Amino acid sequence: MENFTVYNPTKVVFGKNVITQLSRTVLKFGKNVLLVYGMGSIKANGIYKEVIAQLHKAGVKVVEYSGIKPNPVVDDVKLATDLGIEKGIDVIVAVGGGSVIDSAKIISLCIPGNLDGWDVMKVNVKPVSAIPLITVLTLAATGTEMNCYAVLQNNKTREKTGFGNDLAFPKYSFLDPRYTFTVPAEQTAYGVVDMIAHALEGFFGYGECTLTDHFTGSIIKQAMHYGRLALKEPCNYNYRANLMWAATCALNGMTSYGRTSADWGPHDIGHILSFLYDTPHGASLSIAYPAWLKLQRTRIPHRIKDLGKLLFSTNSINQTIGKFEEYFSQINCPVRLSEIGIGSDKKNEILSLMIRNKVNGFVHKLNKADYEKILNLMK
Ligand code: NZQ
Ligand code: ZN
Image (cartoon, rainbow, N blue to C red; front, side, top):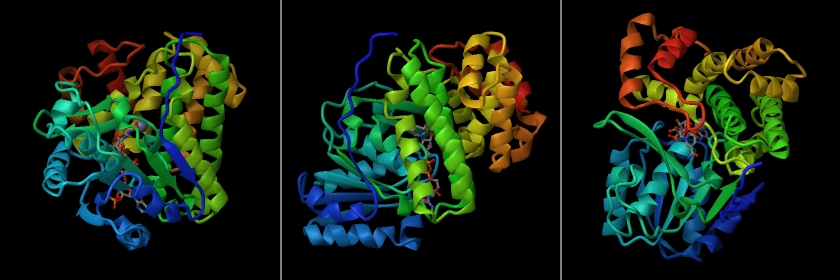
């Protein structure tokens, strides 16, 4: 087991109707709120109304920044930062999935020093403070509600990249599983793949800790089980609640206890697909992860065997990888590029962006020859 530090200051408030605590929570931090949300799902499903009612009850001033896109771009962070500075906002409420919350994290870091979002992402500048961030989660997937990471895309530099800083932990996150009842089937399934992928990134990190392996295995089993059930019965509270909590635990630190690092190679590959083809994050992973596992078959056979034993009671590496492919396909997620209309003619385009963005894992290093192999395995 490697040395490690546990730090997670986010207060998670989980369950039915927890939104009723928003009004008094927001007042702990300020009176001028920047409300950040996406393309409108919260208006269609009524979550917006409930959030606004709470903010009115608190008697705070509210400025809105909406239109954050899935696979969010840094340009929105810039516009929202300018708005936040102009209006003198002192607290941010982000309502949505990973795209909205990640954008809000970087906005919260940019406002105090009028920083550039991309400079923050690339660690060219170091923020020294952050506007307090409260999140209201509407989609079970990324775990951003209880971690300090954000992922953004920059169309000018042609990158989609991740970032982490202790200042980016939300102060509070409100998780009402009922808010995920309206998540469409395909987005629910992408979320399931994402939480499984996060657990796997931890599992293939550096350092051995059997207790953490068991946490990780349980998260994956729960995600697979409740994912299937929630797709059949989207408005079942118990199914959605278990899924939501699995997503949070898959990336709130606990899958990395006893390790120095997770891997993140498959995520890096997935980000290339999302950048080039706007592939939803989970769909990029259901294609990238099986290919990455196949590449690692002969390099880390013992670890893939450990995983197979933990999850599927098998010693067979091929069977283990096959089980993931089978599950992803059963929940209608793509496992090959051809299934999302990306043909062999795109090979060079993908390869050159992989080279340019130096796609890699932290632990299991990838070189150009590996990129070619992975591309062949994904096609
Ligand atoms: O735009 P809105 O209206 O919000 O609609 C969204 C969007 O179309 C919709 N949606 C969300 N909640 C809904 C809903 N529709 C109906 N009912 C609801 N309750 O779902 C669509 C996808 O939303 P998005 O926020 O993009 O999805 P997700 O939560 O999967 O976030 C993906 C982003 O997070 C990053 C990804 O790279 C991607 O950019 N990640 C962030 C991580 C982190 N911060 O720790 C780690 C992850 O590995 C990931 O990279
Ligand atoms: Zn992810």
